[in-house]
Length: 213
Image (cartoon, rainbow, N blue to C red):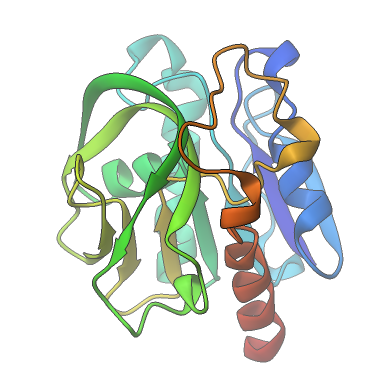
């Protein structure tokens, strides 16, 4: 069972984390962590996914659930529970482990990534065109997280932990044509969903979780 934690603060925008739960192979459990930031019993799950959010990880007004979420990240690391961070989740994991996240311009389109680490299991068989919905990014990665992909605007677009089964991606592997009309500012640009197999990340993570149990 993989636990999907929704970190979206606006109820009307909670359409992406349910897609993570739907698209991740195998059994999943979906919880809105921001409404009830109670640390889960990690022994009950094969892995954890942290979703995106319209919040920013450095917002003090959200400390009531961001701090418990960071504690969860460190518990997953210490207990070697597989963990995947998506967009905000990617940023949260870096911040929880000592990295720095800053404001950037809003992007809601396809971008091209360049993989820089062939050993990143989360990115295995991933095509370079991926969808993004974000306005923040990691500027100083956590020491234990090695950057595994970059774009022309960010050197720390994806990462993996040096020792623990932790992976992070700045893009949204769950964002498909099914929900493309949800964000009002989405624009395909010069690419289309036919160019992307971003859901592969969720498949890779689920496979790792199955094999690790």
